[in-house]
Length: 177
Image (cartoon, rainbow, N blue to C red):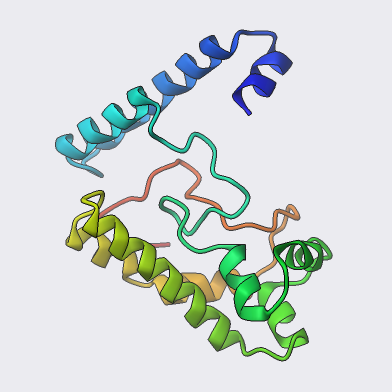
């Protein structure tokens, strides 16, 4: 993806990659300065950015705000359809709730599957030391409501995946939207 974007911009891949790393590091610094993350968390993030150990762009099934929790793979598995079939139905303007109902599945069951998948990934992040238990608890606070809202709403731009927060960071300690 970097090579393609660099080519379209008429710059080298390394120049684009370095600019993106700098922009991400600047955002980490801003998050530390604003108190949204600790200096230790910021240092760890910057170390990952500089090592290349970070997802520069989330793939088409990433989401719910942090490191790709949940997504269309989980929804497709619950619904008994392929991801391609689910993409097609969502691209046609249906919500996940409408797709679930059309396939004879409950919306609450779909929400439950997505919440369970997110919790599984959060538990793994805590076990791996990427999150603290307190951060996990903060992220889980209101998660079912946020997922329910996503399942019941159509993406206005036809985008059929769940995206990360617009500014790229989960805001610990700030009430969830």
